[in-house]
Amino acid sequence: MSLCALHVVAAYDWVAARDGATDVLPGVCLVCGSRVGVRYPSGWVCAVCEWRLGEVPDGEVAPPRVDVVYYARWRDRVKIGTSANPRRRLAVIPHDEVLAFERGGRLLEQRRHVEFAAARWPGGEWFRLDDDLARHVAELSAGEVDPWARYDRWRSEELARRG
Image (cartoon, rainbow, N blue to C red):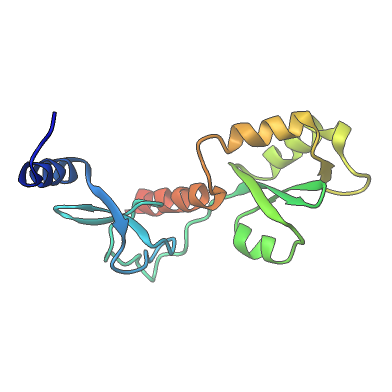
């Protein structure tokens, strides 16, 4: 079906009003720092963490705590560790890329160390990226190009739960 320019624009506006239109945010998201948002007639929402643009997280509220198990690759090794602040933790660990995050704390980290013990380098939290570990990381990151986007979404969800 061919439409004239006027009707194409009308159809676009109808879909954008219903489903939103992804675009560059007019300002940075105050929760996760993203510059990509979804524009609705009622306002902007961050495309990464879904925080409403312009809403300021309450400064008196402690930042949300989200414990994660991280999988960070450095050369031919993968570190399986845990942190409540992975940005700060990974800033001091040599790594080439963050492969995935998994929501959980020390207990989950210990279970993963046992699960992948056959690939463990002696005396630490570093593992060879064998087929089992690669498959697990692929399952964790399925549908997510940037693991930090998932982490930011978890943080946003924790903020939303508070109020």
